[in-house]
Image (cartoon, rainbow, N blue to C red; front, side):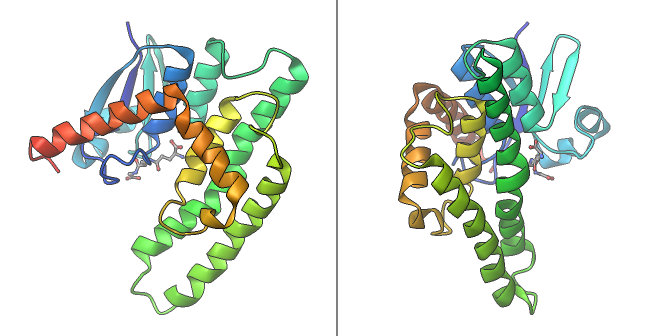
Length: 219
Ligand SMILES: N[C@@H](CCC(=O)N[C@@H](CS)C(=O)NCC(=O)O)C(=O)O
C-alpha cells in the first residue's frame, strides 16, 4: 500500500508549488518512496472525514497503513526517520539537522506566514501600510542571521538534510515580496534546492495536478 497524501484539489497558488504538500512530495521523492494523492476541495477539507485526519481542516495529511499524520513538519520527520537520505547517521550531525528542521518551521516560517496573511486579510485595514514594513523587518532579521550562518556553505550543515528541505520550502514563500533578492547567498541556496532532481519531480507532479484541474474547469 502506497502512502496517501492529501493535497489541494484546486491549489490557490496556481501550481507554483507553494502549498505545503510540496515539502512532503519532495521528501518522498528524495527517499525514493512512491505515493498517491487524494485531492480535496475546500468544502471537503471542512468535512468530518478530513477533520478526523487534520483537526484544523488543512492539507497536507499523510496516511500509511494504520498511521495518519498531519502537520507537514511531522510528516517530513516521519519520512526522514523511516528512510535513508534525509537525516545523517552520526548523532551530532543528526541533532543539528533536527534543529534546522524545527528552526525552519518555528523560527523562520512564522513571520513569513504572518506577512502573507496580513497581505490578504488586512489589506483594507487602516494599519496595513504601517504593519507590512514592520513584518518585513522581522523577516529580514531572521534572514540576516540565517545568511551569516549559511556563509559560503552549500547546505546548512555538511550535506543536504530534511532541515534544508524545509528551509528551502519556507524561503520560497517569500517569492514575489522582493525580500529574498536582498540575500544573494540565500537566493543561491534556494536555487540549489530547486535544482535537485527530487524537487523537480515533486514540483512537476503538483503542477500537473493543478493543470489537470484547471483543464477540467475546477479552478
Ligand atoms: N502547520 C501546518 C499548516 C498547514 C496549512 O496551513 N495548510 C494550508 C495549505 S499550505 C491550508 O490547508 N490552508 C487552508 C486552510 O487553512 O483552510 C502544516 O505545516 O502542515
